[in-house]
Amino acid sequence: MSFRILVVEDEESIAEVLSEALRRQGYRVLWARDGDEALDKALSALPDLIILDVMLPKMDGWEVCRRIREDRNGKEIPVIMLTARRDERDAVAGLEAGADDYVRKPFSIPELMARVRSRLKRHQSAEASSSRVSIMGDLSVEEGGETLVRGEPLDLSPTEQRLLEVLIKGQGRLVTKEEVLAKVWGHLGGDSRTVDVHVFRLRKKLSEARAGVTVRTVRGRGYRMTEG
Image: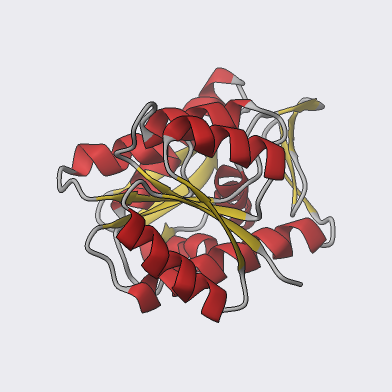
């Protein structure tokens, strides 16, 4: 299967390097030069993955990502954000907008290709996964499927769903940040802030839904799913 990747980058030289690297991996590449074009191509072509720059003409990458996530057809598309800005708050803003991962510029092409492969593999595995259900509190989590709270669907991003699956399988045991990075993002090591942001968002959604469970942070070690 030849995956389609949408590259959203206004600097032509960077877009060409990225596109060539992706084609060498066997991917088909679409290119958008600004935020408006990115949103249009993302929701009309429905690519298998989007590499999205933050600083774009017409509409920034954060807003593009938010709008993609608000559309029912774009909700499941994996998004990797690129940022040249060094402020950690910018990376956090991208994750909070719904991105699955982020990479800072200047980036290593081999590392970015590894992240693309990992994200596509996990997205494909989730779609093909057999349906095993874990129950805790008022929560029913179907592996590779959806999460229900008292029978009603809980609105989670693909990454939040996978994170919840990993945590709930622990059934109260400590799950380290390294374990989460490996199982959810496919990283052996990496920026644990990515995990922190997604855990925060997941914890907030569980609380708002009164799911009867929460994610406890064990400082410096990891996370534990508990009832209450």
